[in-house]
Image (cartoon, rainbow, N blue to C red):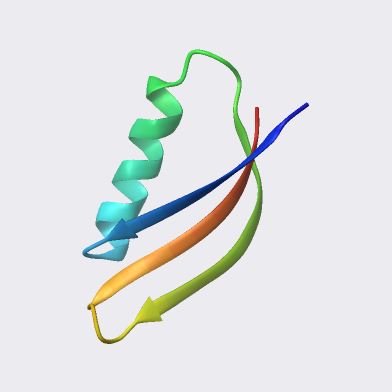
Length: 56
């Protein structure tokens, strides 16, 4: 069991959700998002940033 940290920068929350869905669909091995460490707004860049710990 290994863990990887993924940082996703998106223009909007909707784009982030679409990216996450594509990431899960495109993955051949079972992946489960087990923990959302933080979801915050970066004001100076106008981006949403989500940090997730992924079990693969």
